[in-house]
Length: 305
Image 1 (tube, helix red, strand yellow):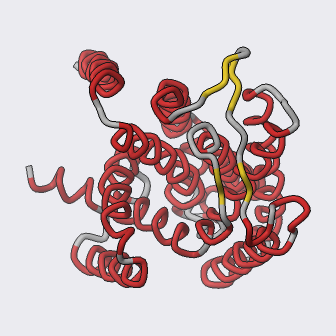
Image 2: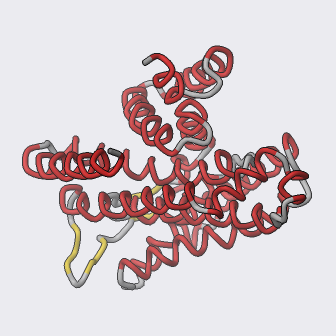
């Protein structure tokens, strides 16, 4: 039954992609691309919070590192696959460093240290003008794939969709693997996990590194359909958005993250005209779910059936 549902799900996604490609407006295609990038970015935070139980507020920084590293490699005429690898790897190295810090801290201290890293990286994005363009932003050149230049959101959509499906599938495989079970054992109790032979330090390092890799890859995907990046879009509001997706979608649930990315990705677009109220509204939503549905939206919907 599960295989039948999976096949039907894949068929529905393919049919939806064909219809979208053929009939949707340019704005709708852009919005879907953005939702897919938000999904991969949120999957990265899911790995570190939902699977291993560690707290991180640095994902907008990892995302920005992925964007700038991929864009710079693309400017140097590197093939897109290599440029995407550079973006993901650069973010993963930073994630590894944060993971080393995580071995010494937990709870509020870990949250504060990752928040500080995110703020420090935004300062770097704003002031390292020779590399990032500073407050003037960075013009991202068109992505080239197998010699063909991607010049529009519609041309980028198949590539973004394939990458999002691949990263989603990889996250599902991780969730159901022995490695995923070891991460969740660390989340539930580090002492109990160590007692049954789980290398807690290695699991924490792996979680932060893989999490940052996904965030960097999301940044690389963003460069396929966007022509410009400014540091202001990589601030705390992006972290709040992704945190809301993971927490309200359902901590520990991959499909909860998928639902949360769709709902809050669309809400983020609707609130774009009210930037002063975005963080306040997300904060109220987070407080409401923590008080009345702490297991998240996905679990609440399943319980209501």
